[in-house]
Structures are given as structure tokens and as C-alpha cells.
Amino acid sequence: MKIKDLPTSEMPRERMLKYGVENLSNVDLLSILLRTGIKDMNVSELAISILNQIGGIQKLSTIGVRELSNIKGMGSVKAITILAAIELGNRVNAKEIDFNIPLTNGEVVFNSFKRFFINQTQEKFMAIYLDTKKRFIAYKIIAIGTLDRTLVHPRDIFHEAIKNAASSIILMHNHPSGVLLPSKEDEEFTRVIMECGKMMNIPIIDHIITNGREYYSYYDEHHQKD
Image (spheres, rainbow, N blue to C red):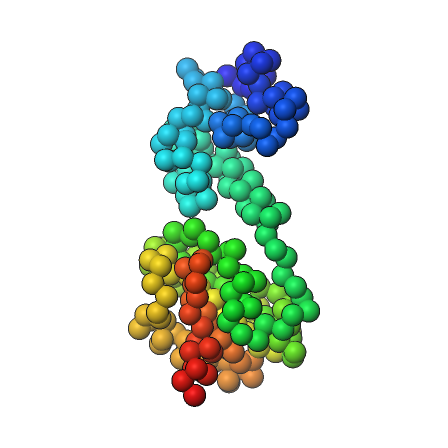
């Protein structure tokens, strides 16, 4: 059953026009994105079923497209639509990166890019590219891994650096476990990639590890010990 087949009083879009989007229920909002139900279940009932299966509306920010697609009545198209809507909302509400502020310490970098790592259940690896004054040029999500592992190759990092004529790079990735201290793999990777940066004359000036709420900065840690 489609939304248009529901009684007018139950149509989420009609209620949105009459009462405003902020007054819609979670089921109404999800129903608008789903658009259609399935056999023996109208779209509102499907929305209720999905929310019950995942454990509430907040869980939508932590679920992946594959997992969401596998829920009965969902499918890849609906899953992609929902996750795209969530990301769009995040970007609308997120503070834009100030292109004129030099990214000279871990706190500034963390505050500028933490929105990419909040509530993430997979490891995500980002490279941030800077000009000669350490001002932001571009960023690139290099890889998204499993719960505790991601595969990153130096060529992917430096290819983007060359393409953007970057003078230096800041690396940033998350630990879904919440632990901020670098692992042995983090330490070895950072050492190798910094050597690559020296050879390419595009230095890696920091590597930040975050859980979306706090961060660890190789640069800050090193200079605190000096």
C-alpha cells in the first residue's frame, strides 16, 4: 500500500503541510522516505516494523546500507534514500569548515572534522589536504573498514595530495571501540606514511585518532613531550 492509498487524515505528507514537519512523528518521517509499503503491510506499519527491528530512530545513524537493506520490506533503494537523508541532515546542521583558519593543532582539526566520525561503527580513514599556510584545501575519505580494521595504501593518500597541489597532509581516523590510544598497527602505519611524506616532500604534519567525542593527536603528543 502506498501513502496515497491511506486515508487523508493518516497521510504523513498531508499532516506535514497542515502541522509542520517538526510536528511529525518518527513513523511519519520514515514513511515519507519509504513511500511504499509491502504486501499485507502499509507504509506506516512498515516504518513501525523497521524502527522496532533496529531499536529506535537513533539507531539509523549507526546502521550501514547493507544491514538496512536486509530488513524485510526495505531493499537497497529505500536504504540508500534513508541514509542519504540522514547525511543531508547532518550536513545542513554541521558547522561549515572555515577555509581561512589554519589547521595548526589537533583541537582545531578535531572540531572541524569530528562530525564525520560521530556514532560510527566502522573504522573510517580520512586525509585532509592543506596549502602552504596550512589552510584547508580538500579532504578525502580514503577507506572505510570493518569494526577494527581498515586498509589504506600510501598511493591513495598522495595521489589526492598531488591532484590538489597540497603542501602538507593531516590524517584522521576513528576507533569504533572508543579507545583513543594508537594501536601497534597505527604506530607502524604512521611511521611508514610519514617517511613517504618526507620522500614526496608533502609532509604528514599530524595523525589524529578520534571516537567522535575526544581525540588523540600525534603532533600534540609529540610536542607535549618535547
